[in-house]
Image (tube, rainbow, N blue to C red; front, side, top):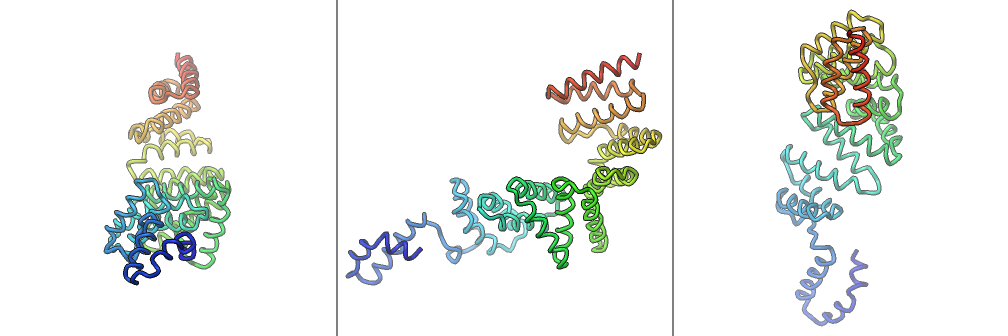
Length: 322
């Protein structure tokens, strides 16, 4: 950078060669400041707020490359956990534009390791895996976390990442189960326990591996752990019991799901909840009970393909119910 400065400003330096050293330094500082877009160095920030404001200014202007340095300085200067998390979330946006993913990976890992919210951990994991998959670098993550486990380093994080990687991207249900179960053991050994989300994820991996009994039991366990997702998990438990040709247990799970009411976290989830239960009830030769679910599903979707399927199933259910 210094050589580039002298090459591009040699005439200015020559003109000022007889000036006092103090004046020359002042001019050089001013010109260098302009050349760098008035970017301050980390040592110049008095505190994390000052550095954050500088980084936020660059981000608001769409200059994410320039925002990195002040945001990194803000993180180093901060001693507040919530503030550090906010800075890391901002850096994620900056780092995703870098040619190499290392900083992006580390930033997402920080969020996963330090967040108190399971939903944040899950969304961040999915975002990181999707980012690497789309860039053809998912193998780089696989190697990273396998090495961590071998070296007994960040084992919970590594199993957490690999469980979804094998479940959604590498499509290896057995390995997905292996890492989810390993995560459960580590969590238990550390005095914690699996969350409802993690238990439901394990159930999904069992389902993908055609271990339907384990899947049904895990879904029912997850349903008892979090009332917000209980109805959804009872619905999935019913589906797993049907795969085992155990209609009585499927009926019991459906009844619990219906007692709790539809999943209302989004219209799409509400649609799937009603449609899935309707499909199960039709399979159980219960067309009358399927009809209200199909009618409710129709009200929750505007997707033409979904509507056509629902309308056809509704006509069939009404015909069978006569």
